[in-house]
Image 1 (cartoon, rainbow, N blue to C red):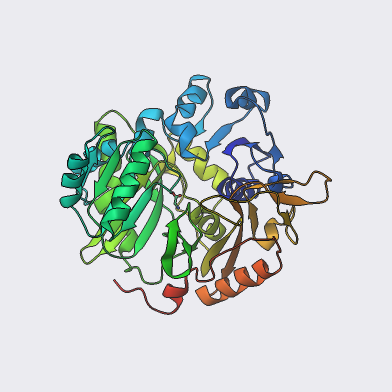
Image 2 (cartoon, rainbow, N blue to C red; image 1 turned 135 degrees about the vertical axis):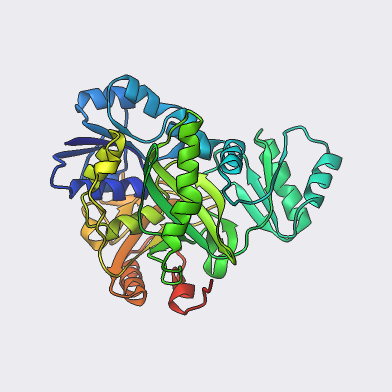
Length: 420
Ligand code: GLY
């Protein structure tokens, strides 16, 4: 099976690496990809995805990021006759439009935050009145695609108003939400219409600094599974959240096919939805795929071709996986690019390196940073402590001027500080 992966981040590197290890996969192509993936995939930095799928005779196209999904790339590829892992533009609205997601959840009876829109052009009095219905805490979201960085959660009314102004300045409406208390869970599910197959649950760390300090990012690290989640946690999320939403989307004539990502808060009464995404999460995927023993290509192909109900149960390794993001100086506000990366190059997948914002140095001597999220390190262990130790030991081998990473990924779980 020849597979084309669309995207250029560490999530796509992880997908491409796992796909390359599936015995039924003969070729992995990635576009635009990044220079760090070149040992395990053929990287195509340019080109139209449909033309490329034709050129490489793809048996399956896997679309990583949300932007091409919301823009309809899966529809274009399907119209051209390719099996695609990823939802149609209509179904991708579950991520692309917070209003669409809220409407589906309301009709499916799924627990989520109370929400109110503030449209672009709202007066100051209207904004004040809307904010008065919420908070503190204020949850102020960009109701568009914001790469995980469009939400500000704050108890400070002035900061909440400032973010409303920032989102409106970008010409997007604002979604205000009530704050959902409890630890966060990311549950990824393969979904093919009514059929839902959950992967292992993970937890992301979204703030840039230790102890959840500083601005939100696209995610600074993640671990899986979650030792604090009740034993029936995944089944409850499937039964109470993902299955009702998948069935509602079928009933509405917008069936979902691909990866449905439920972002949840586990409160006193169990799961409540913070958001849905229409694709694999970054960086959780880097950890989750490390635990999967079943062949990934066959699972994604079964989903893409409407045969998910015939897929044998997924098999998982024992133990834990953890991933840590190495970010560029100044990330997330204004990352400085072009820093040499010493100690991590092409072909370092076995050491757990998954690259994102990297390119080959002009003198060809190695990789330099080319984005705010530079690379991930992934490690596994019999315990979370062991996985943490291995990941951080590996990070110590990597030198990048100004680079920074959180040192507390999974630490609250290791120290038993997460209770539900
Ligand atoms: N882990 C956050 C995201 O993928 O949106």
